[in-house]
Image (tube, rainbow, N blue to C red; front, side):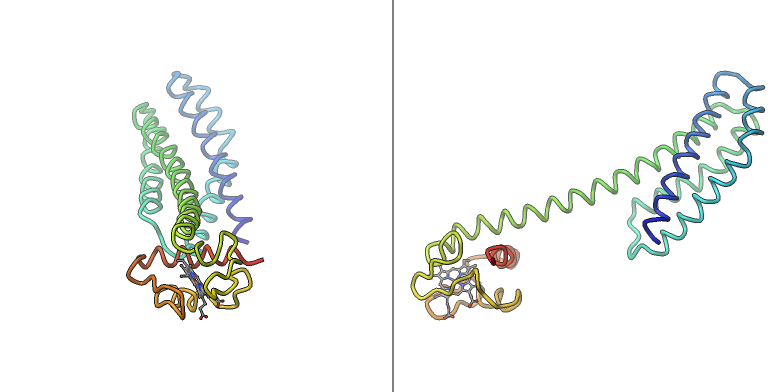
Length: 203
Ligand code: HEC
């Protein structure tokens, strides 16, 4: 449902933008007659596109767990741009029409930016495992080996460990038997990262 409406939103936004781009170009080029004709011709499709765009947008809003500042700014910009556009086109005011077009494009750009932020968050996720790998090779391979199977000094084979994440974190923090307590050597995040890394050694 969410995905379907997301596409409806995307398509209607693009349609809306295209209509607007065309109208703005006509206005800027002083093609008043063409603009009037086009406005009349596109009236119904434009109404459908803008209704779909608003409904799908509102639906998606209700589904998002937390509303980010960027999203709020985007919504405010879209809301402001609507009356600006209406007045701009009614009064044939080029500045206002252009301004509203820029605002809508900017709002669209913000949506793209927030998507980029999401990807960089996943990239951070990768960095954590890389960090985990680094921490592991600096502190753990002497007993556990690169693949977790070394079992030096009575160490357990990490690739068959049945411990859950919390138990692993506790064990790494406090040590056990011959294993060093890493609570004072690594910080909380590093311990979590290395515990997560050991889970990747599991076959
Ligand atoms: C000095 C050797 C030594 C070092 C260094 C060491 N370990 Fe261990 N590790 C052990 C020993 C010994 C055990 C078994 C403890 C027991 O159960 O008595 C163990 C057990 C574990 C276990 C539990 C496995 C299971 O399922 O029982 C995990 C997880 C673990 N180590 C992770 C790490 C990580 C991560 C590091 C590096 C931050 C590390 N160890 C560094 C010796 C070591």
